[in-house]
Image 1 (cartoon, rainbow, N blue to C red):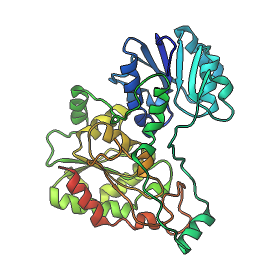
Image 2 (cartoon, helix red, strand yellow):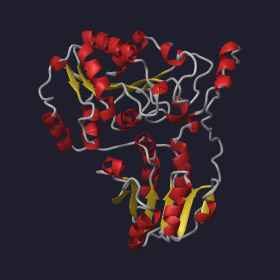
Image 3 (cartoon, rainbow, N blue to C red):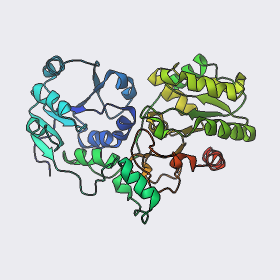
Image 4 (tube, rainbow, N blue to C red):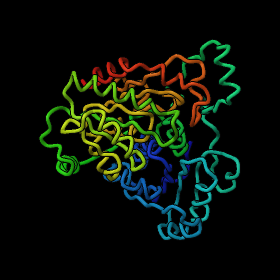
Length: 367
């Protein structure tokens, strides 16, 4: 149990990726409840800085540029005179940052090459489940001679509990909360105006067919197109196509296949992070791969439908584990989840998720 005086200035070293960052929000909210009088500052990469605008758990956000040196960053942190740092990533560098910033109390998970930099190295959480990357030989063996299905993972295996456990090391409650992000009414109105969404001919549905991690997380594009056509025929929806700059060709392909015009708005590479959040909030439902916008949409209150292949919804699914609003679809194949970037065999995990199943899930999730 934490016995030290409560911090006056708490620095939280945030995670580096959008999906991971969203999954830390329950821990941030628990820390705000535990330390209502503390000034809580989050340190994160520049690309995620705007994610935290309007978030009630935080008083301040500091960010660092790609390639910014350790000593330069530490020198920027020292004048704030933080008395406690909670390090959410597991990397040696993140622990070294707060060590060099001379923050007297430094708490994070015990991991190789970094424990010296922490004043409290937290032991691994009981019940934690590691993501095991299968070898090609293991996958081939499972396909040739399938073993009995592994027992279902408990809700406590989810990644949000890893961050809650760290917060609990400071005395915060470990009980899970739903991840939460926030946008304002003005931001929603501005997004509608900028992208000519008011008025539109039908309900707004989101489609996010990319995934940065690799092709093993991507349901095939022809199936996205087929599902989108079926759904549009039944709902007369307007599809908002999401994606980063690298997804622009994919967005153009889907826009063309859906006939373009007023029923499709291709937003790939056109939005800021805050605009993306506002647009996700405006959607009645989001059909998406397992990627950062999936987590953001669920945290904004938008139901999501997700075909899962190489990854595990039990470990990193969107929202609060077990939330029935989220439709997380898997096929029954013995080699999934493999946690690989590319499938070394025939991509049966994603090919086993039928268009009709996904379309039906979207129609039921939209409410």
